[in-house]
Image 1 (cartoon, helix red, strand yellow):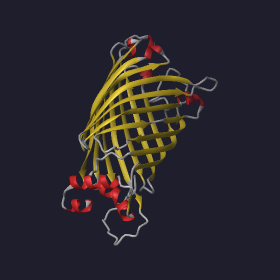
Image 2 (cartoon, one colour):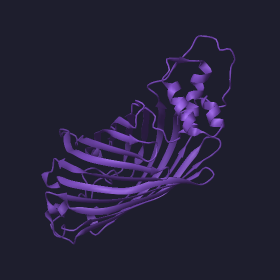
Image 3 (cartoon, helix red, strand yellow):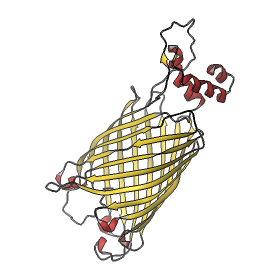
Image 4 (tube, helix red, strand yellow):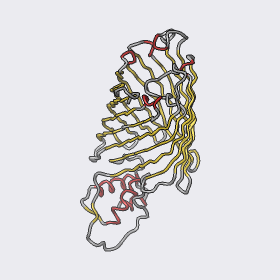
Length: 362
């Protein structure tokens, strides 16, 4: 019935038939195999009930201080900032579908980053992040209302005990307006081990992507932010924008190249003890150029390589940085459904080929 409705260009009717079929106790094996593929055809923006991405990476950075959670300066001119590095980045989302437009969701987003060289080992960290909320889901537009928390553990230098460096608590909202436009905003507090850095924060922006020509996609984001710290020297306002191209070859390879630009202004930092007790207001300009190449997917697993060049120019020279990072990556992505009919052992009177299959998650 769903295939007939799809053939008649009745995607709404096909969606209703597929949702009903998904909740049946059992179905013929060919129908079970076609179910996921047909759902993607008639409802490409539908949220899968379970989704995940696990990424392992290893390589080398010429400057482990750039982007470190503690925002270190080059106060120690003799420090060796280059180091091998290993990262593990996990994202998992559970969004049960009860056949209603209101859907609960839980996300887990732990991240581990390790620099083994002694001079920069103190910047290694474990970030335990998660988010719970509800989707107001009409496919599109779709709105997420959520609470996010994050706890970051700094491993510390040899001989030092690990430190819970900060804990954050935020309210967030995301609105997927069209397939190519999203709006998002968040606000909350972040409590640091260094009390002067503890702050209230708010941010928001827009992002999206569209297919420019066949298999060439444009991805973009613009984000503004404001932060008000216990020590006014750490008050900061800023804006970040990113622009990337992503290309998919017929053979299954994909590549991504782009630029990210960010500007930050610390309006009460002139002469502040937090930044050395002298100098003008701190203003930073950050630029990153990046390139990634990924292999075809095999059971959702891809092998990739990435190169990033980053540069930061600051009115306080101790915060000028540049960095090059070359990483080899292994990523596993996928989706699954919590409720699907089991395959019937009763022989079908005839096999019907819908022309779509479950496909491979990637």
